[in-house]
Structures are given as C-alpha cells and as structure tokens.
Image (cartoon, rainbow, N blue to C red):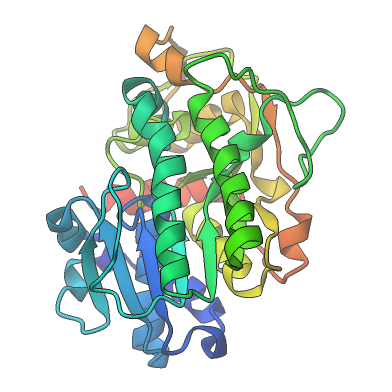
Length: 352
C-alpha cells in the first residue's frame, strides 16, 4: 500500500483540495520548491486533487534536486500534463527557462530538523537566504502574482516571559553567536529579504510561519522530536524522551499546515506574516510522548542525547504561537495534536 491507497490520507487531501477556492487557482501556474518535503508533498497532492475533482487546470512545477526521487514520490501523476518536474538546487542560480509562466511561487525548501542543522549548518543558512534570493529573482523575472516564503516559529526565539502566545509582531531572544542560530536567523533574514524585494522591485509576497509540523508525509530522515516519537510508536517501541520534556510548543498536522499555507497565499494581505497555529495543538514534549506511548501500549523512557543531536536542538523552552490573524481569514484546523499524531501513526502503519 502507498499513501495514495490509504483512505485516511485520501480524506485529508480531499478536504484541503475542497477548501481551495477555484476562482483563485483555476488555470494558474504554481511553482513549488521543497516539493518532496513533509509540507510540500502534501501541497502537491492537494493541488493535483483539485485538478482531478474540479478540473482546475493548475500547472504545477515541482522543483527538486533529485528528479528521480520526485518522480517516485508523485508516481501517480508522472503522466499528467499538469505536473512538471524541474531540477532545482538552492545553492545554484535558477533561471527556470522551462517555466513559461509563474503565477504563484512558493519557497518551501529548507533544512528543517536538528541533525541537518548540525551536519550542514552552511547549507541550512544558504538554502534559507541564497536559495530564497534565487527564487525571488525568478519570481520577479516571471512577474509572479504572489510569492510565499515558508518561515518558521523559530524566528521568535525564546519566550522572554512577557507573553503566553507569540503574535506576528513578537520578538523574542536568539543568541546569534552559536551554530544553532543559523536556522532561525536565516529565516529572519529571509523575511527581511522578501520585504526588500517588495520595496525595490514591487514583488507581492506573504509569509506563512509554520510551526512544528508532522504527519504521514514526514521523511524517514526527519530527526525532530515528534518525528522520532511517531517512528517509535509505529514500531511499537517505547518512546524515548531526551530531556525532562517540559518544553511547551505549538504543533500542526500536515493537512492543517497546508490549508493554512493556502489561506495565507490566496487570501492574505501582501507583505504580511501569518502564524499557522491553534491552541488545541499546543502541548509539552512530555505530554506528547505520553500520548503516543499510551496509544501504542508502551512507555516513555529517558535518554541523554548524543552531541550531534544536542547541537541541533532548539533552546526555546516555550514557543506557543497565536493563530488569530490567520483564523480571521477563515482558516480553521481539522485536528488537535492528539488526534493528529494518532492519525499519523495509523496511516504510516498501513504502509508497512
């Protein structure tokens, strides 16, 4: 069985596709970097479902460093005249000559988990800054209607103790004099770069700020804590917690992350940032581990992380986002975090 055969995954994709306003997407050209990642791959599936269910006529350009991997991931659509595979390496200039029109450009490519941060800190920064610049230049050259830069909850840094929820104007604390700061600081720089392109070149953009996302499209190499918990749950093993677990974070199931991304892209105000978050998906790391352990009939055990893992971990102890601004556009999530992780485990177990 593949994801495309699983009825739960099909239902998630169909729900998001149904939410997409046909009048805003019909016959548009959409360019997506990071298209094989956790969020990007679900987005592609939802747009292709919109084509199938509503004859939307979306021309979708999948950017990937490895086209063979991309074709395998989207195997059911390889013969579709609406899906196009384009080689893209964020570290290299991108002319996109094979793309005639680009109405919407979404930059989702990024190193997004701790082992990548510590193993490739240069690549982490460059994808978020140089890779973004390359796509901003491409979007300007194609006179794109709108650009979306997928930013992160990590731009808020550590909670200073003055608020419970981070709204889009909050500025926390980040110690920039560390290797780990490369990810949040380059995301911050990327947001500033988008504003520079709007001021100097008139590019319309929005910034959806993703929180800690998870779901059945997660990659096997994903080393985020929630991903490791889920993998242990699928294997029916004890859940390994590598801290006291008091960290209090916001999370998003992938279908909710993508629907939020689309609301920001298609209905957001130019130049604005939008948190994709809901309080029903805020949970401590310990409670998250316990939720999964109880669901699979196992226990939570504690383990000291090795140096490589520890170097990539966020130092934030509380990072809860305020999603009111996005909800004002009409967005609402389908799942709380407990339902979402159980759904993820159920879907991924069916693929074994």
